[in-house]
Amino acid sequence: MSSPATILVPREPSAPHSSAPARIADLEIKDAQLIFGAVWADLVADVGRENLRFPKEIILLGGAPGAGKGTNTDFIAKARGLTCGPIVISALLDTPEAKRLKDGGNMVGDREVIGLLLRRLLRPEYRDGVILDGFPRTKVQVECLKLLVDKMHALRREFYSTPLSIHFRQPTVHIMVLFVDEKTSVDRQLHRGLEVKAHNEGVRRTGVGELLEERTTDFDQGLAQRRYRVFKEQTWGALQELKEIFHYHFVNAQGAFDEVERNIKHELEYQSTLELDPRTVDRLRAIPVASEIIVHARQELVKRLDGYELEHPELFGRVAQFIEKKIMPIVLRHAISGVALVNTEDAALDDPLSLAMLIDVFSERGYHAAVDLHRIEVPEHFDVATGHIKCRLKKVYRVQVRFPGSEIRRG
Image 1 (spheres, rainbow, N blue to C red):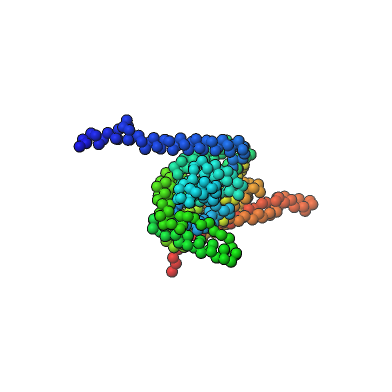
Image 2: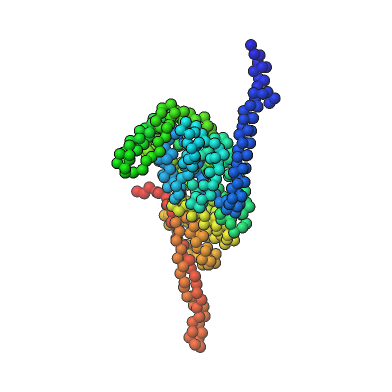
């Protein structure tokens, strides 16, 4: 019988069993470094560092088989203001070898996944943001993702003070995990198989429509169960490792379609401070947020604000200070009505670009602002001899700020 001392031995650093998990983790990290290093070197050689322009926002859409990733992709894209289609990792891996692995419910090699993905991310349509459906799926892919984000930050620092800086913005990574239990997953996979089979039979019979992919795992309960368990053993753990690094959203996808949509919408409530350049956030920190900003044209708004800070920092600073010191005290006094009118002759608004900055700042903070310029001739001197009146031109900016006012019970 083992003594208590024997039981404690595996916990000692020198014991063989205690270092086994650490050695496995070290090997995975080294494999990731080797794989990513080789892929990155090829990429730099092919396109050049100045053309390594990756998406501003990357949404990693993961989930159990049958959780509804494909079904909810359009809704997630709309919620984030994305106009491009998703990158579906399984669709990238269309080699015969990859197809054999997928048909058996297994995973595809990490080197192939990383190489294809990085090149696809460089396409211009993904510059503002993209959804990655089915990535990462392994711990090696998780490490490669971390290395990619590190490279994106390094590129941003490298080109920060150059004319190309707007192409290397602060990257944002969201992880969206749709979760269902094993029974639901298997039932949905098999139900999908029946629907696809019926659809394809109709296409073959009538010649109308396009054939859909028939996944082997959707027609075999054992393979469907294996696919779910592979997800739980590999992908689930891999995604959990990113929880402490990136913005993480766990969504219960067990319910009906509209219920899942509500859950997703709740998780993806927009916070601009997660996406703006840190210097821009610091510049605007003293201006309070009135309410949630409307998602429409979100990427363009963020791009413009970061552009002001990068390309016109002095003017942007004057405008932000003008808003904070001159306008916000008046806005706060009108918090009940939700409407503030400000007349000003401040020279900070004389530059036409400053008016655009002012409107964009208020839009980002959740307000609606409009500015009118009124030119008024003010008499300055009267010549008694000639009767001539000399006037100066007075410019008055009329700023109207609207926002949700306070709801007060009356009566």
